[in-house]
Amino acid sequence: MSTNNNTTDTVKVWDPLVRIFHWSLVLSFFIAFITEDDWMSLHLVAGYTVAMLIGFRIIWGLIGTRYARFTQFVKSPSQVVSYLKKMLTFDVPHYIGHNPAAAAMIISLLISIIIVSITGMSIIAAQGEGPLAGTFWAGFNAEWMEEIHEFFANFTMLLVLLHVAGVIFSSFLEGDNLVRAMVTGRKKYRSEVVDK
Image (tube, rainbow, N blue to C red):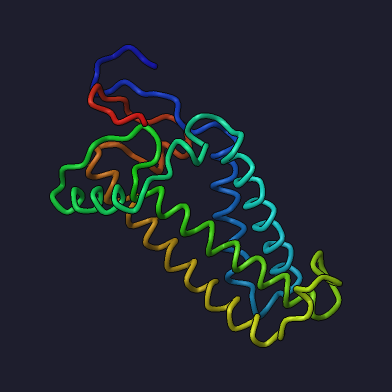
């Protein structure tokens, strides 16, 4: 922590692996999303990269650094609703790690991207290719899987847009540049911070 004063001190929050994961996932998902119909080879590489990144994040959420762990930031639905109500009054507590709304968004994004990844690999498996070929996933109707895959890809993009809006709004509410924090790994520290 720096030693300026209570309003401008910073604290290390996001470790390098979380930050590399975050920006790699942004890039990989965006590439997969825009190449769906035109460049299938690039779409597959980006999609497999997304799946591997999500696999890493799940593991890191269990064994990683303090603020990367799910046990540190996942909150109950009632805590999320309470936080969202406080957002509407512009009076939210400052969290060092993820606030309850951000945590709910992260879990939603992870679940949605997992569905996109599994359905995408199921489509390929139905053609006898990919890591799920020869498994029960290959037996699902490819057209049905494609509909689910496309729906959740679009739903994930909607969540991404809501996430970006939430980051901008939370940055305003908390007086902290959360995008910069995901680049530098550091957030503002305040004495009234919630660190649970």
